[in-house]
Amino acid sequence: MNPQKTYTVTFLILLLLVVLLFLVNVSLGSVSIPFSDIFNSFFADASQYTNKEYIIQNYRLPKALTAILVGSGLGISGLLMQTLFRNPLAGPFVLGITSGASLGVALVIMGSSVIGGVFTAVLISKWSLVIAASLGSFIVLLTVLIVSSKVRDTMAILIIGLMFGSITSAIVSVLSYFSSAEELQQYIFWGFGSLGDLQWNELAVFASIYAIGLLFSIASIKALNTLLLGENYAKSLGLDIKKSRLIIIIATSLLAGTITAFAGPIAFIGLAIPHITRLVFNTANHKILIPAVFLFGAIIMLICDSIAQLPTSDYTLPINAITSLIGAPVVIWLLIRKRKMVF
Image (cartoon, rainbow, N blue to C red; front, side):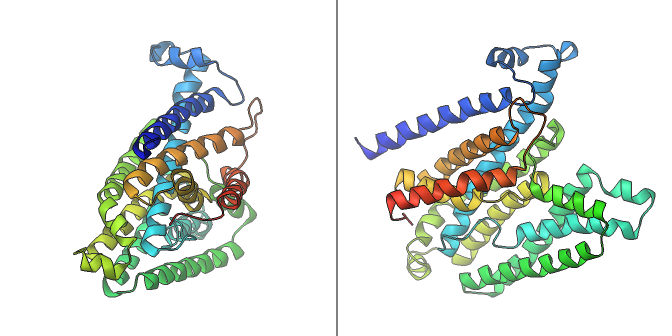
């Protein structure tokens, strides 16, 4: 079969899987909801919602959409970092973005006891954690951008990002040492990651910033393909390395930083999804890889979230644990089966 036709068929299958898994994800939970009720809820009058329709519209749909945004966003940002640094172990958080977000949240949760009293309750709210995580990510991003404008070697930026991660982790450790058990527990729960905490207004803000990051990623496709040939060869083809590198870093930061701010730090997806996609599609062309990673990221995250919510149970497992437990063996199996990686 013609490679183009093969890609088209594969994309259609993946798209159908996303739709099916989306419906399955919405239907599963402590209360099982039939597909027919899900479709009916789209046309129901908001003022006359039944309990099931209320659950679907206000909890299940936002959570399923969040899963798609988180999975696809982390997958794409991981792909950008692996190509930029030409390192298969690079993920979306190598620039220290997650560490910066974690530090911002740690300062709010574990540093708020310094103020105490009424101010603690005011500080520790959903939006305050989102703002703190965003500011932490932005400060680290700004520092990395300043450094990247002065450093020619791309690998040096990777090392600097890892060093920023170490510094922020050390500060978080010091804060943890002096914090109460309640504060530590709240910070740990934030670190588990969560897809089900967003309301429609929060999801709208999340999706808007995500869309900007996605547009930057799409705009980088030509540069990403050229960088695969090596920086020296890319320069000889007329590619502005500094400008391209800046756009890729901004795209990754917008995607990974926003996801961390709204859903917490979620492991594995950004590292593994690009590898799974390359192995399935057997190509290094980012014009194919970016939409494919989008779909694979959405599929894997919807599966992980469906498992994490333990259907028919009132318990929900940490999404971080599920993404690693389910995803890591899949990648190992694929690598053993293929015996080589397309990169």
